[in-house]
Amino acid sequence: MSLSSKRLRCFGRTRPGRGRLLVPLVLLFTASAGLAMPTDNTADHLVISEVLANPGEGELPFIELYNPTESAISFASCYLDSDQGDDSVYLDGQIDGYGFYLISIVDDAAWPEDWPEPDLISELLYFGYPDGGFKLYLNGELIDAMGWGSPTSGYYEGSSCGSPAEGESFERKSAYQHDENEGNGYDTDDNFYDFDSRDTPEPQNSDSPIEIPPASAGETTMGWIKALFGPDS
Image (cartoon, rainbow, N blue to C red; front, side, top):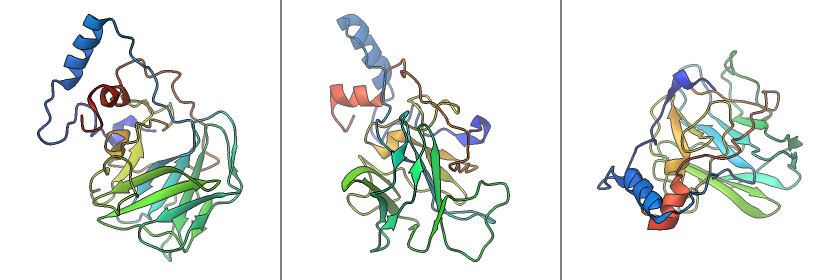
């Protein structure tokens, strides 16, 4: 995905009142204690990878899924729940290993010509704005959640991504420092750290090229920081 179109929000970002010296202090602590740093926060399951909830002119809302594993995943018992509606959206077919799956809504407006066609269009898919969220289920198990603004409890992980500006999507990163060619499998169970905002959305569908996640992040991850200092670090 085009790095030039991204506005990275999370690198070096802290919640209000948090010091910006946390990562350097962690690195110093690690070096002095001789501890090994874990190198991977890549999910081992299907994830929500990009969401456009507040489309700009000529755009439509969408939700994109990514498979960070090498094996195809069947959608036989896979569905999405929105905090804006009572109906579940059931998916069809499967998602290839390291592949994508794109879902949008039924709308009279034309789908943007320069975007890949959705794999699924549903009249039951609801995008809230300024607040909303989705839950993703597979075989009856909740495997992912993603929310923006102030979503309903349970429709996000850790804390929400924030409030998207018009035409701005939220995209899951590949690692703590995002690489546009390494997929969107970064997962610390906190939307605030796992997603970046994109000034220019870039949806991908099942025909888009696969993107293989990094073998290792090779650096201190937010998951490791939270393991040391707790979830509010």
